[in-house]
Length: 132
Image 1 (cartoon, rainbow, N blue to C red):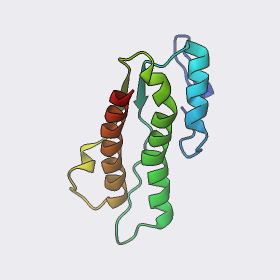
Image 2 (image 1 turned 30 degrees about the horizontal axis):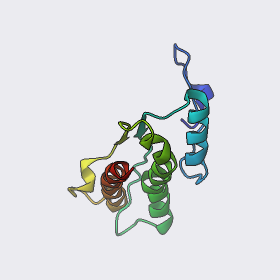
Image 3 (image 1 turned 180 degrees about the horizontal axis):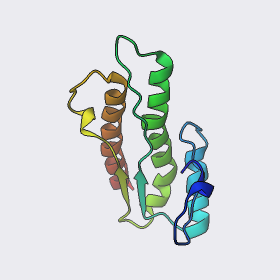
């Protein structure tokens, strides 16, 4: 959540300001979560943007921003949480993705590339969890 103070949750919840493009935030989130709860049982990765980036008109900056948020941020977050997820033995990583990573139906190449990356990360997280 970028701005926890903007939340109007009717219950007492643990919130953490998380800017996905900041490479340090994955580890910061893990540290704060473990400090608050003592462990991590599940990681649900749902950060994402959908900027329309075509091959004709898209810019490198648009692609970089999309990959930073949709691919690199979940990668860093999973990587930081993995040691804690291995401890309980039955923890899970839930990677919210899109079928756009498998089927290309429009010209939004940047988003589709990033969602393909999410699917690979999801498989990698599953395999990494079994190694521990």
